[in-house]
Image 1 (cartoon, rainbow, N blue to C red):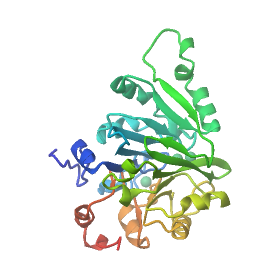
Image 2: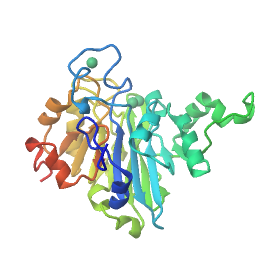
Image 3: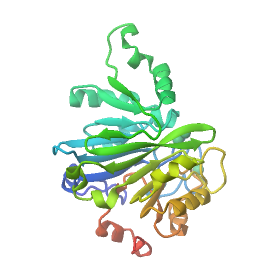
Image 4: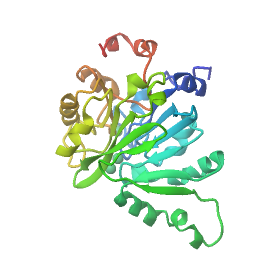
Length: 316
Ligand SMILES: [Zn+2]
Ligand SMILES: [Zn+2]
Ligand SMILES: [Zn+2]
């Protein structure tokens, strides 16, 4: 691997590039709960040689310099692939972990926070709804009730914070507002992220990226949430597969929602193996794309160009 880093045609970011850019949003995983390829499947997507058809479980990292110039990393969800994702993205810190909901594919990486406890010499702040926090306390008794462990052992150390829908949270010069969304009958949270501190707002790339909304595992947007989706530069939206599904937007439903929201750029995530990257991505309307693992926003012109002629100018 060279300075720019390359793995089967995909350019992975390196730390220097992150620091230079001041802000970056990296898709750590863009796949359905079972991941793609799916175990024991020989379909065209699962056997594809296109690296963009390999999708780990959904997660993303926002890295930026805060109002005092400190490097910060905010993580969205912590799924079962977090270790692999952290190694690939060279994550060295987690200043806040925000959970969208309690499902296993978004929460079963909590144990991996141990390494960040060690690296940062302290507990990690985690933010979630009451429903998700109740789930975490039940499943991770060894973390939340460590005093009852049979002997002292190396478990993650976290500080839980309760998120309320529509109530903004200030984090390191950013305002993060939980967006109520529906995942079938389950209320889940999306997140609207915007710079609130002028220093943070002025960081290179912020204008291209924020306001950003991260909305995964969504099948319905309640009326009170639409105002939080106005004026977005970047929308990250769950889109499971071409066919309808009771708890996720299909590709067509996600396109309809994205067109109504009208963000400058929309990136779909949480795709299953019925979605082969190249043909599905190519057929999407302008300004709407399938994300892939390792994609870093904002993208440079050069990165857009290196994708091939058909993608040229899609943002214009
Ligand atoms: Zn999911
Ligand atoms: Zn398959
Ligand atoms: Zn889910």
